[in-house]
View (spheres, rainbow, N blue to C red):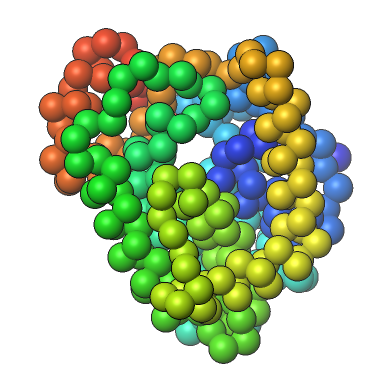
Length: 259
């Protein structure tokens, strides 16, 4: 059986779970970011990041590589559209989700995480910069959704990659009102009608109750792992002084380079 080193709240892991369920795979999920499971995660990924997919002696690391592996393993239903044009578009939005949306949302949402109860405030202007950049991406996404209702016409990895990020925007004050974003609102409703998405939303909801209902988090509650895209957005927006202070306190962690 496939084993997914997972986390209920990681947008990258959620993407892979939706892809696995969309394609009809049976798999076992391990919440690998919990403190007790971290040693096992580092055995398969020295960077300590999810998701990781293990298929007997094959280990696929990185959500984009896992999605490609799933299509190699079971070509239908495909995670990529049929036409070359739409395939290129799907890969583009997959990349936007992984690099741009994740970076901004991660950087501005640290103060809302249930795992971290920070006593400080965001640096001045951070939330405003994040909301501005996220709304710019949403305006492009609004125009990008095809008339058939999905980003690339048919359901694809682009939808599964973007969906977890878009559904988190309300927690950081980005309002997708129906007058400005009618296609996007319809896309969200259409996504929620998919069985694999309903399963993801329910498992995430139940996990939030299970993991945080007692008031004690099973995850690291002080240090924050920063990948390259997250650091890049922060520095590009001029928050290098704050970033340097985070590193000086030991709260900011940069993963070890992978092989």
